[in-house]
Length: 203
Image (cartoon, rainbow, N blue to C red; front, side):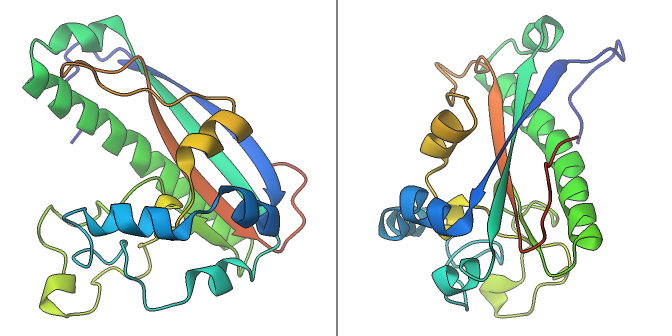
């Protein structure tokens, strides 16, 4: 679903920030596996979505197989027209979710294209899987993922502190909704881990 936009004009401004560092350093400085595993266990998606913990692999061992972590932040600032459409908290949630889903579709496609361009690398999406309709994931039924080629865990699901990642590495302070209103801006943080030598990652 896209944001309701009868004018056809952009409803949000999207900008990007990029950072790169050795995976070993990113793990050492920004990964708190136990803290974020505990937070994940409190979420209703824990064990019920194939993109979420617990995983069947050792996360640290898997992550350590890559040399460089490229981090991508998408900063999405709702415009005045979109805010005008949000008369209450329900509308704000609906429009905000549509805005994020639209951004995720573009981000995820770009990350998968990077995997194609740089074999044996791995993308990490900004949030949980939303490829299947809500409540239809096959994991609770102990059945395989129906789209295994498109599923990628998030950095947070693997134990990374995205608040510190955003502020210290990407120069963005996370913002949150207050009283049901749209925040000043949304931030989506994705990752691309690789052993290839890539001078810079941008788009």
